[in-house]
Length: 93
Image (tube, rainbow, N blue to C red; front, side, top):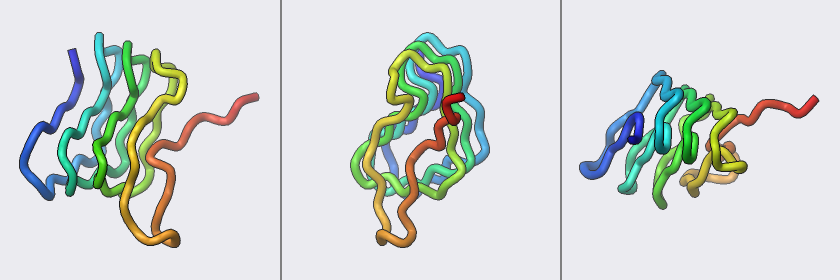
């Protein structure tokens, strides 16, 4: 089961949430136009964050320990200067 899922609408801001220890993905955004900022998705059985085309990355999202090795999936929109990685992954020591 997914932790947080936004299946419709447009322009929602998903901000400062934690999705952890879910049996599916941590956070899923299935439609363009939503903004994701400052969320944490850890130890989920699928993706940490799965964002559809057109998701706006507000920065500060983190993911670790999820079943999907890449932790996060999804293109983000914005100018190259504004663009950041959808997830900040922990550094490998």
